[in-house]
Image: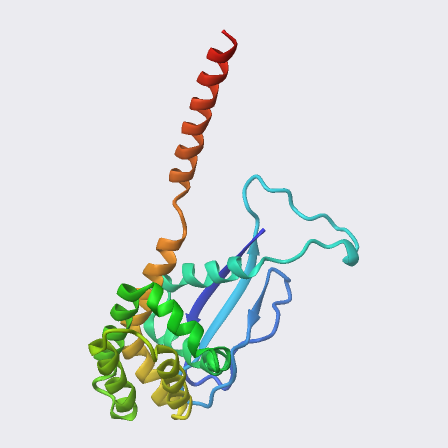
Length: 227
């Protein structure tokens, strides 16, 4: 069983995001918060889909139930749904997750800086995209100037601190302003992150070709040795 995620927009007049499980039991909506009328909103639905060729769980007691999808499956479902979601929906999703992201990066400046030093080309591309995206928004001028300083510096030390500062400033703005800023400023950044996520997953064809080559070599050597 694998996790499939769908990200879609809902009318801005909705008072809250859908969070009730459907009566059919086929899937459950994951609430991301509530919004007032007139603000942006997004609905994220997660459902388990059968994997072809895999054994399906039986009607066993609850104590013997198989564990749900792991974190990577959930993340893969989110990344896979991004191309089908419009920018407003993804911006709203990021805005609702921003407080949790802020808590996650708080106090981890050294770890973020270390990652930036390991991926300098990617990080500079992200900083450049954020600098260009934030230029029209005076609310985050400090972050715009910080991106400029980091791009001109020889090292990327300080990326962690500026990441936390950016999220802190963003979450203090009204929800509608956050959605407007993120939909524009984060478009290029999310594109870079998507590219990184794609590059980290090896192609199945490459793995199968490697296995075939290994098998052929072993077979020939084994036959000759006993001939």
